[in-house]
Image (cartoon, rainbow, N blue to C red; front, side, top):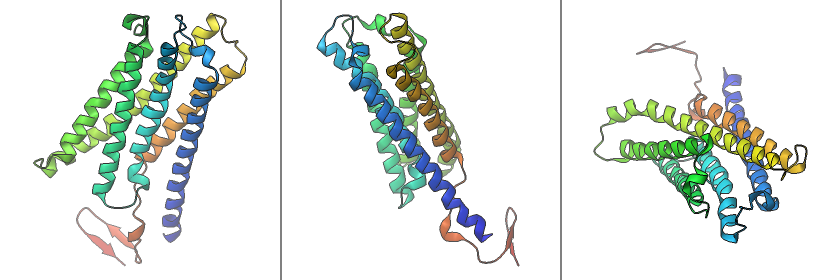
Length: 247
């Protein structure tokens, strides 16, 4: 019994470490791609302003939207303190992620090629859907969990849907990023800008793989049973719905 309880903190720590490692590698790869291989982000107009907007889009959507929202999901697993404190940090981080997502989409509206030229693909449609769902989810969470007049039973009923939609939207964000990477790399290779076997292609493919890894670890950590380390029983017990029998 004691050995099983001692192994639980180690499991949670390992998942959190793997999530942070994956997030760090994702951030390094997307920064390297966007800041080092700038030729791949040069628009047809060769405008310096358009180049900045083109580079900002992957940085905001991957680091600002996906990584920060993933960290917000994990807040309840690592942040010490009261439940109220965890909820405040969770809400604040999700708000930052939402702002990054909105600004990331806004950068695509600023291109000199026009709005229609940037919103024709499955990636763009999924991106708008994802940020819209994320905004609705954040607003629902704010109203349900922070409104003082909300009765507790209503919040209990909403919680499973809040968790489901949160994880679904996070997974959708990662899938949307994957379609964006595929779309961008296919376009560059079709136009001869990037070879099929080169360092940039390896970085983009590696970014896609680590995004998938990050998504899996974050969701696994979120759905794993919570551990209460301070309440390890000293006696054996058998629990029913209403009673506890000790021996």
